Amino acid sequence: MKAMNQGMIARAALALIVAAGLAGCGSVKDLRPKEGMGQVPKAAAAPERETPKQLMTSSTQAKPDRQADLLDRSMERAEDPFDLPPGPNNGRSGAE
Image (cartoon, rainbow, N blue to C red; front, top):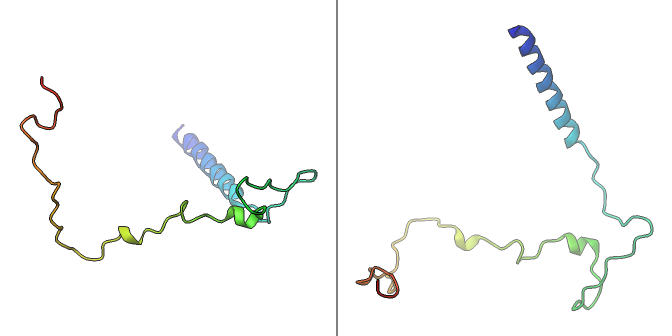
């Protein structure tokens, strides 16, 4: 009974591996509109219609530069004038 279950699991795993391999296969082609489709409409504020390549390129706002986030060495923190202890009401507003 155990050998039969192990065989079924092995076949299922093999089928899963083959399916994953086939899913990874595909052709890479340039994007083209289907027959009967028009061009991409021009944006209201754009001076001219964008090409498909321009539409597929990320802007710097969508993909910002992260150089400022990296620390390359330890540094002492600068004095923070707003790093104050809580007041007598412990940060609560109003009287309770």
